[in-house]
Length: 113
Image (cartoon, rainbow, N blue to C red; front, top):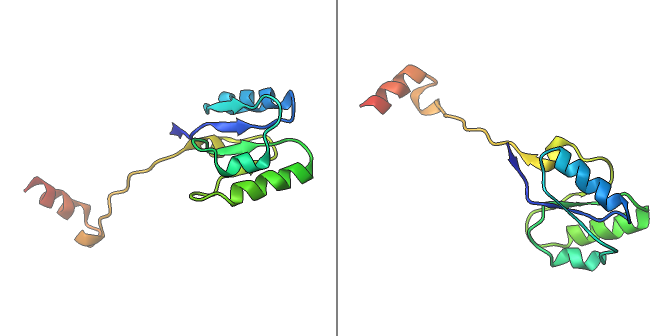
C-alpha cells in the first residue's frame, strides 16, 4: 500500500490538528490549515488528495462544490473520521491467462521459450 497525496485538514479551528493526527495515524500525510481557507481556493490548489471538514453543513457544501468544480480527478470531502481507504492506495498486479485459455502452465512454457 502507498500513501495518497496529502490531505488538507480544514478544521475548523483546533479540529484541523485532530484531523491531521487521524490521517497520520493511518499512515497518510496531512496539511493542517491555520485559520480558514476560502472554498474557491480549493479549485486552484494542487498536490492534495482530498480535504477534511468537521464543521457546519453550509461550509461543507461550499467546500464540496469547490472540489467538484476542479478539473481532473474528483477529490473527496471527508466530513467524518477518515479510514484507511481514504488515506492509502492499494495496488494489485494481475496476470491475465485468457490468451492461453486459462492454462497457466501453457503460459509459463511460452515465457520460458
